[in-house]
Length: 174
Image (cartoon, rainbow, N blue to C red; front, side):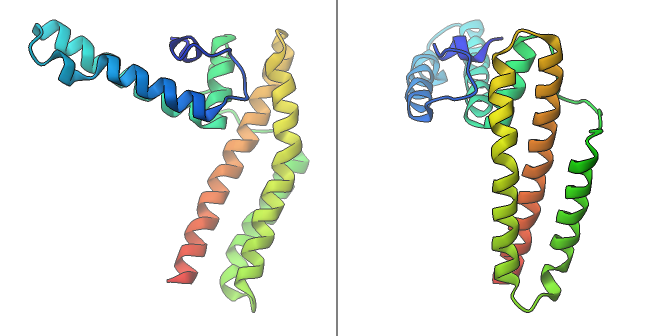
C-alpha cells in the first residue's frame, strides 16, 4: 500500500507533518469503529482494519527513517527485516568511536558535556547523510536506490545510538 496516496501526499522525503497530522485526523474520523457500531460484522471488521492501516501509515510517514524506507519499498527495494551490513569503513570507525564515547560517559568529569558533544556529533554526521539520501530517493536508478539504502542503514544505526545516549542521560539525571 502506498501510504503517500492514502494521505493524498506526493511521495517525498520531506513531508509537512502538520498537514500529515490533519489528514490523519480526517481519515481516523471517517473510519473510526464507533461510526460502525450498528453496522454489519464485516463492516465493523473492515473499519478496524482500515483504522490499523491508517495508524501504520501515519507512524511510517511521520518518522523520517521509516518514510525513507517506505519510499524505497515503493521503488521495489524492501529494507525491513534485512540483515545487510554496511561496508563503509569510515562509518564503521565512527561507530566504534561513538560506542567508546558512550561507554566512557559514566567515568567522565563532565558527563553532561560528553552527552552534548555526542548529540552534536550525531547531528553533524547525519546532516550530509540526510542531504544525500534526499537526492538519492528522487532517482529512478537502481544503483541510487542501493546507495539510499546504505544511507538509511547509517541513519538507523545512529538513531539506535541516540536512543542509547538518551537512556544514559536519563540514568545520570536520576
